[in-house]
Image 1 (cartoon, rainbow, N blue to C red):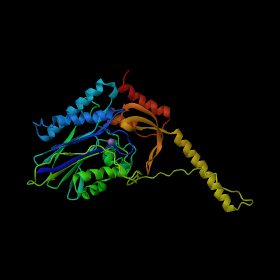
Image 2: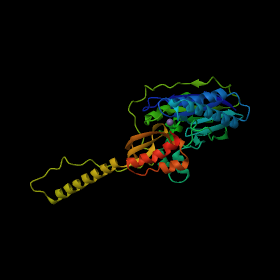
Image 3: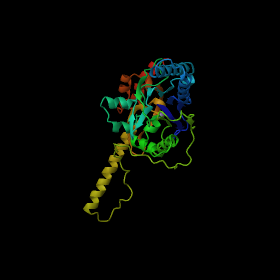
Length: 391
Ligand code: MN
């Protein structure tokens, strides 16, 4: 069993200015890291993780799984140490999903919501279990997988490198057969396109490199709301040529792709009825108002009043959620996304506190999306801020 080919591609997407993802494509080691934190902290965290893995690639003295776990632990120590000594990047963190190919098997180690997939015989199989808020809710039966796909907090992770002195790393090994293709990717791919689209992009491509580009393009066509990174490697027949030099494609904006993003309607999307704007114009009063016209007018007036009440309610309601970079955030509005990337909420306060700094119980209590006043929402966060940042 040999590696046939491999490729890594990273793209900032269509919305974010920076690319906080990093990857490793140095056979037999592959990895994807998705950083978080303010300013340039997310970029630093993911790059530190990638560099730590690369550096330890050849120190394998133990079995591949143990090697991956200890490399990821070392990456965690380095990021945590840097975050502890440099206030500019305090609280930074990153996901990591790494694979090491040896002895006919692929060892995988991971923390966070970047994923590993195996594509075999025309089917795609997710190998990793996300360490994320919505994955926990799905596992405990409180959300369906369809609801999780459109949940506003779907990118909140519950485990990361760099936020604590120690981190729990999941690891396992799977077998590899000739013809298998393995995919490592950040959530910027999997929140934009589903598994069927992943499979389609890989199957219609004549090489791994074009498959990687097709995946990035598909994510961008679906909105490109996040940085998107993919690493692909394929398994060759035993008698094929040894592994060629790793192909690497650096992040480059795709100038050929259409500039109009076409947001997908997520499966199982729950469209929410939006109050229509008050229908004040266009109601003309005739000299003789017939009964039918009167009924229409009354209905319109009632509708306008209801819409007004609904809008007033929206502006009064606040809830605690998690914003960009995993920061605890107070939102005004209601925690619903309409199809087509329309949000019924906006940020009013962004804390330095990160969701991963809370215990699962604290997250469950704080992020329950209960509608409260802004003062109440901020009080709830302040309790945890005092714990995390004692002054
Ligand atoms: Mn991401």
